[in-house]
Length: 225
Image (cartoon, rainbow, N blue to C red; front, side):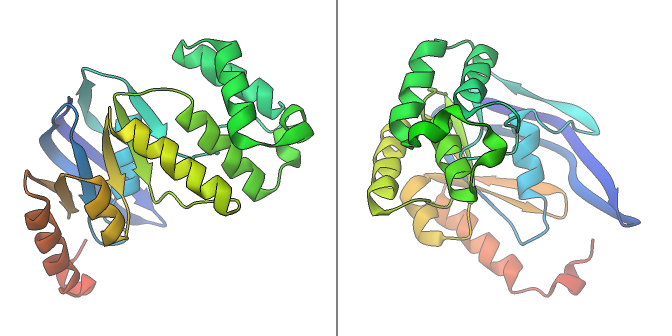
């Protein structure tokens, strides 16, 4: 279970006031797979990062009774001067899992060959994504955060990634940000719509999608900040 308590997030970008969360109170039930919907710029990724703990709210708090992943496939936290294997070992220590097991798992999953033991800064974008996906899938979480995950690598790697992710989802919940309605309908069983700092949570996914589509029909300048 993830509970948002009086959650507020306000920041300024290029002199403009942006209100992502305006005193939000909401609950994501244990085991639920929630589609997080909203127009571009609504703050979905920021809200996801607050739930992950990588962005702090302006006020309020997020309480969880289970473990929460970082956004699946996110490579932005790897240290450029460490090798892929060293980065994975560091992640294992942070999350309290067996370091040797995770290093071995990611080595097999990412299939980077000798590059696994070379500095992360030398990786291509595809190699970085493979390492990130392998690390994400190598740790079991109660809730996975998914922010516009894109498949990388060849067809075999994409198929392997999908199989493993489906297995994880069979035993865990998720909060999913995606513009792909087929992906949303495949992965999620309820929805939440972020609009002008308010979060509307629906037990019925179709109702959430209907509200989201109605919001998209309103021009942004009519909606306002």
